Each structure stands twice: as structure tokens, then as C-alpha cells.
Length: 256
Length: 269
Image 1 (cartoon, rainbow over the protein chains, first blue to last red):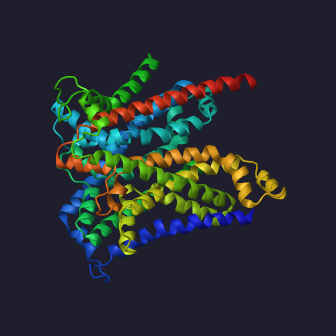
Image 2: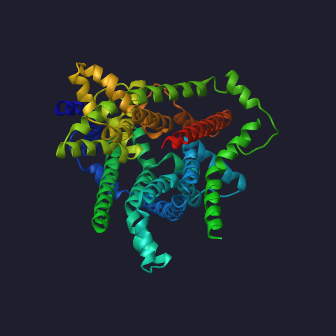
Image 3: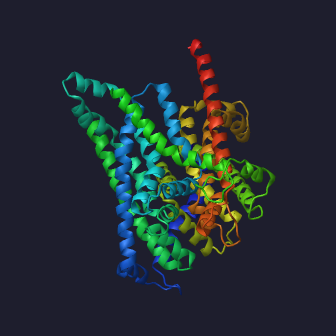
């Protein structure tokens, strides 16, 4: 048996070369100037750049709003789907996933054109619509999955013991589905902070998000500043992941 | 009543999700340059697509070729690498197993832009000229974790003794792999391959950062460049409509055959 564990080695080398080393390089480049000597100026440049800071704040705001809307729209949908007869629900869940097979940029452009035709001004509203449009399936799917796996007898027991439907939901179903909610939040929040094409298309370049700044800097050969911005994003990802995995444990500890 | 409301809610969401796709499909049957401007029914865009008479001298067709080629190569490599890795990870224990699984999760958690920028810096650092090779390597990086996750459950469902039995009966490790392990893991490998292929097809950000300056375009980067220039190539409309129709037909066929095999299996059980 033990011999076969060595089959991990090729992939381990691959991961170190193409995942770990690149992330270390982001850090290295973030703290270097163009000549390659150590500097903090890239990071301080970001914190003293009012434009970059406000873009950053706006990106976080849009991402939070998008995540919240996706959750509010997606949870009921996942719940309805999970309570359907098995045969029907699998057809409907495929219907929800199907549009994702069409190129995301193409769908976003079509959405923007649809707004143009309807005479809707492109701006923050249309941006949020497009984000919800693109990421809603990522919220529905994990919640649906966990609701499907959930032991329905917990909810039935609560009902038998006299809980009303609202109590059953708030005290049993919702807490049990929290791991699904968290992975949905993770799958929606992180890509939204970093997206760049979607915001460009849906606001006619009027609103810049954090991803766009990273892209612009890298593309105009400002690698070090671009790397510093990517590094800041990495920190946010780290915090979000820690935060959500902590909560996972709490939920598991609380219920099992 | 409650059932009606929940049904109506799902339909409303679905209509919103499908609106842009239907919009594209409708306007694939008119000649106008701008999406949203109906100039009478025509199948000219479809004809252009088939005959190759696309504006821009076949750049769109080349982008489609590149997209498919990259996705195919990346998905194949990911499938092989991911399957071997999954067998290894399955046989690891404790801390080591956790560590490898943690590393395997990183590409899935990282947003595309981080994967793209970090790999861009790697290729710069190693002085690798960016082009097909760098894009394919980048795609393998974010595709393989999905293969690993698809194959691992098949390993735990498998009887671990049959591989040992094959070895005891005189099979070489390679024969045992080919004749025993691979057939057992095939469903996981196939779903991993499909996942990897899809992720690669749909990727934009990672390709955007790792394709270098040799003018390599995939469908996504082509659409991005096109939209930034101001006008979307009209032939993209019939293309997307065809892709959507093919996927729809495939799913109906798969669903139909699954239903058939399910009803065939049920009486036995």
C-alpha cells in the first residue's frame, strides 16, 4: 500500500512549481522595486493612492452586495429544488447550470445589449444585475447539495415537537445548511472582488473594480505594483477562507 | 397555492437566466451588425460561419480551433496527472494527506485573476516565452484539482484487494493499473475530464495573463478584444446559438439514456 503513496510525487512537484512558487513570486514581486531590491513602496503606494483605495472599497462593497443578493435569491431556490420530487428537481437543477456552458463574456455582453435596447442606463445597478446573473448558480448549487443530503427527520422531529414552520427553518434547517451557505458565499464573493471583464462591459467602463486595476498594471508592465495589489487580494482571500472554515467547524461541532 | 408560488419563483429565475441567451438566439437570424437591431429574417450569419466568410479573415475560426485544442490537451494531461495523484493521495495518511489535499484546494479557491497573475510572474521569472505551452500549463494547473476530486470517491468505493490480487497473480504494476485500476476508476476519470474540459473552455482571465504577446487568441480573449474594439463580430451570435443547441440536445440524449438504463435496472433490484 505504502509504495503507491509515492504516486503523489509527480503531482506534488507540479503543485510546488505551478501553485506554491507562483504565489511566493507574487509576494516577492510585491516587495521589490523595478531593480529587484527590497521596498515597501508598492504597498504604501496603494494605501496613499486615493483612487486605488476607493476602487478597492467599491469592489468590496459590490462583492458584498452581490453575495447578499445571491444568497437571498439563491437560498429559496435551492430550498424549493431540494423539496421537489427527485426526478423533477434534477431536471430543474440542470436548467440552472446549463447557461454556464455558454461563454460568460458572451452572456454578459448580451445582457449589456439587452439593457441598451430596453433603454436602461449602464451603471452600478446593471453591474450588480450582471454579477448576480453570473454567480447565482454558484450559490444555488452548494446549498441545494447540502439540503439534499440533510436528514429530513430532524425537521420532522422539530415539527412533531410543536415547532411552527418558521421555527423549524430558523432552528433546524438553516443551521444545518450553513456549510453549504458558506461554500456558496466563498464561491460568489471571491470571484466578484477580482472580476474585471464583467464590470467593464456592464458599466461601459464607467465603474472600475479592483480586478481591472490589477489587470491594467500588469498589462502596462507595472509588474511590481500589480503584484502588490494581487498580494493584498491574497490576504483578503486568506482571511475569508479562515473565517469560513472556522464557521464550518462550529456548525459541525454544534450539530453532530 | 404555496406550490404555485414556489414554482413561479423558479420559473422567474430561469427566465432571467435565459433571457440573454434567447436574445442572442433571436438576433442570430438577422444580418444587422449590432446586437439588438432587427433588420429582417436572414440565415446569412449561419452561412458565413459555415463557409468561413467571417469578417476579420478567419480570426474567429482560429480562436475556436485554439480554444478546442487547448481544452483537449489540458483536459487530457489533467486527467492523467490527476488520476495518478488521486491514487497516491488515497494511499497517503494523516498530516501528509491533509497537506497535499490543502495544496490541491488552492487552485480552486484562488480567483482566476490571482492564478493568472501568479503564473504570469512565474513564466517571467523562469524566462519561459509565453504562448501555447504556458496557456496549456496554466490550464492544467487549475483543471487537475477537479480531476483529483472526481477520482478520489471512486477509489474509496473500490475494493482495495483487487489490485493486490492482480499483483499476486503475477501482473506487473503497469498491467494491474491498466487492467484493474483504470476500469474501476473510469467513471471518475471521465467526469473529471469533462469538468476539466469545461473549465478550460470557459476560462478567460488565466488565458488572458499567460498567452504572451504572440497573438494567441481563444474564444474568450477574442470576444473580449472584439467587445473592447466596440463591435462584436456578428457571427458570434449563430456560433453561441449552435453551441447552446448542441449542449441542449446532448443533455436530452444523456437524460433519456439514463432514464432508460434506470428503468432497465429497477426490475432487477
